[in-house]
Length: 204
Ligand SMILES: [Zn+2]
Image 1 (cartoon, rainbow, N blue to C red):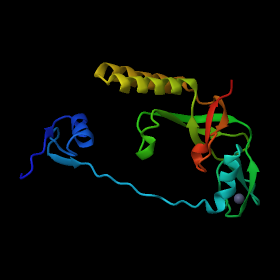
Image 2 (image 1 turned 135 degrees about the horizontal axis):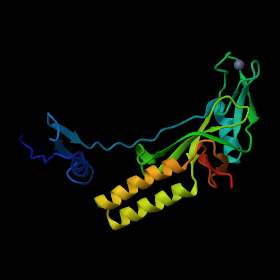
Image 3 (image 1 turned 180 degrees about the horizontal axis):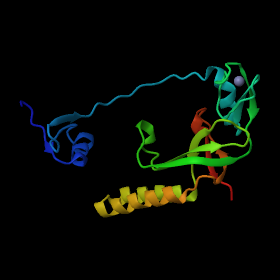
Image 4 (image 1 turned 180 degrees about the vertical axis):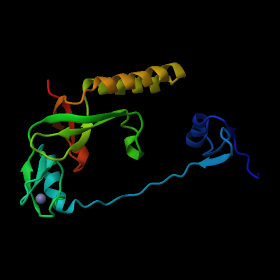
């Protein structure tokens, strides 16, 4: 090969070279060698909220709305211009003040701009008398503790011991969060007119 490219057997070392080194590396830990390279992309994405606009305007004012079918009464916890059951148009209604965790996750990684937010927890919120769920970020004290731990780990330079401790902690937090926990919404002080203008915390 005309150009010398470093080879690594461990994928972690490949990523280090690709992200922080020359931008290209060969992974040689498998049956066949694989060239892996970094591509930098950046673009502006223009988004129109169209018929969902009232939802995001309410969200910016600290209010969660759902949509309810005017014919069969099916209620959705998210913007839903037409009913999935019968196809009829829906009307907006105010969601209850709080709900319960239906299921949850704790993520160590995220794509694109969400990578910096990690670790984070996503939950599906079940509201009483509402037929679908709302996905949102969940920020209990345990998640804030995880975030502090990650920051500290980055500041001191991660070694495999602190990595293991961090991974263990992630699982601990995952098991500590219980489905069925009562949660309430909190709203961002500086709304961005997107779904992250709301997040949930436990009801004390
Ligand atoms: Zn319907």
